[in-house]
Amino acid sequence: MTTIRLLLSLASIYNWELKQLDINNAFLHGELKEDVYMVAPPGLSSIQPRQVCKLRKALYGLKQAGREWFAKLSFFLLSVGYTQSMNDHSLFINSSEGSFTALLVYVDNIILTGNDKEEIDRIKQALDDTFKIKDLGNLRYFLGLEVARSKKGITVNQRKYALELLSEAGLLACKPASTPIDNVAKLSSTKGEPFRDVLAYRRLIGRLIYLTNTRPDIVFSVQQLAQFLAKPTMFHYTASIRILKYIKGAPSLGLFFPSNSIPHIKAYCDSDWATCGDSRKSVTGFSIYLGNSLISWKSKKQNTTSKSSCEVEYKAMASSTCEI
Image (cartoon, rainbow, N blue to C red):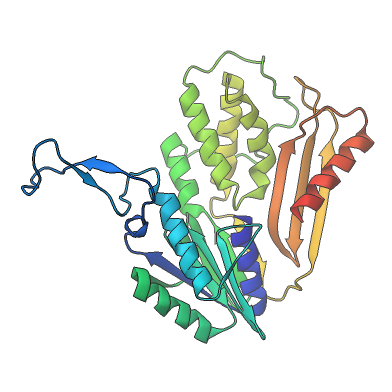
């Protein structure tokens, strides 16, 4: 997701085209290296009893299907002059003499951007000749992210996803909360009665975690509640409902990548010392900008207990530096 936000911010600053492609029947292109057999499908008259089919290519449902498809796609992109990023293996780049094209893959969905229209058209044609693709035009909707573009920049949000969350919880008509979490009431693993439907709590927190891809304002709150997935209490469930009520106030809130920004990396980090009532561990928080575009952030409990606030700050700075 950080790579997606980075590409969107660069496309906004440099006014690059943003195209979206979809591969038809992607997993069927994968070629199997292992011997895999399957029971003959009903109605196949040419096969004898007790005979089975040996697969030469992958099928949907095979554990190897995703891996083999990505291996074939990677081999093809490398053969036509693209370089695979070592930091994000789903990113492929073609850069030469002022021409820059980036291709970002998620299973069978592809984002294509760059400053060379001829190269974009060439790689689209090459992909279509090899795999058969659907050209979905300008990037509008990708992995639940709604993308809108104007002269001022690019806006990304998860409005539809947020409304689905509220609808499932029956909170579409609720009164919005002003903040995502109550800072006075401290969360603890022993506070409150055990919540009976543990799977429902885990499912809700998991969906909230995905919403944080465009909502950094709820990252800390979700991080706090995600610590209690093993044994949540009614107090934790009530706190998670408060986050939903906060989202109700502005379900279309998201990120904005301005076009008049300067591509200079800025980072801010902070931490709180020994605020966890159960372990006395601290929480690291950082945000990283490309110009005025927020592209990466995190709120995470540190792995070890620190003896001083100075030690906590150094750990936060180390985490931020690694992300940069």
